[in-house]
Image (cartoon, rainbow, N blue to C red; front, side, top):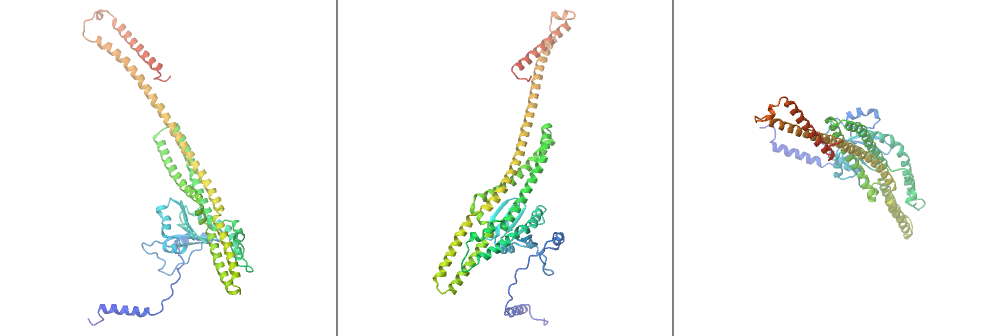
Length: 449
């Protein structure tokens, strides 16, 4: 009893200590730590020259049970790659997208196709490729999947070569956008070099579309290679085994056609809406923001330094009107993206036509098989008709024999040797009746020739 304070006093003492400690100035919130990668991924990708984020201290690298952290791969403009692990909140803060866009990248929409434009990012969900693209980097979800690895390899190979020229052009344009002797250059003349190469986000989109189209083309080629021999075998031999092969082949073809149609419809939807295509120009938005900030800063400095206040105001208004008109012109210019999307739309349309040709071949084979089955069914009906006519003739002969088999007094029974003549004549008459009915059926075209 006397060893210590009661439990409620001990709790109050701890609270006082916490309040006393709270009087100190709280430390500034540390910046979010670099997104870490597990050691297993580092071992698997050590040979691929990947720059892996540094892990935190011991005990901090473990993911909480039930946490939402997932594996991502980050590529910058220079092609530098980094495996990272983060949750939804970190991704939302990093790329400034709503939380509902991350649900599109979830497993529920794994086989859907979406290309969404946001203020600072582009959400890409094409088949197995799920990525978030900004003007400076791209984040790829689940980069260790077997289907995503070709996309990662293409980014690692093509981005360093494509973006080197663009970065130099962007830096030159940033210099030209600065004031030169108190005057500003128009935006179309300053950004003329950017039209030589596609922006970073379109390069990533082009690689994604190329990988997806190549993947779908390979699947269609495999389907064609497997389809035609099976269909030819079915045409020669209609069996349960061959019918089962064709059934599975047709189901695979239907699923593949639906996947190609989804990607094709998404590209067609973008081509039909110029506003959506203009929103995908992330680099253009970034340049316009830089121009606006530089213009505001230059206008403020001119209003302070110059003696006459109305002259710089006129110059700033003129610069603002030039930038505004050029921005409107740039917003309407979606020719680069339109040409890019049209190219892959035509490729997907060709892939879809291949699938439709295979389906038409399947339909033709099914029609041919149905014709064969109908022909066999007709032959069975003809055979049944011939057997029916023969049965009728035999029944007549049996009727005659049954009539004379009764115990009825008849003088013909007393004639010696009449049995052979009577049976022969009755059988001949029944045969003649069979041929007569058969000829009538052929005359009426009830039987084939």
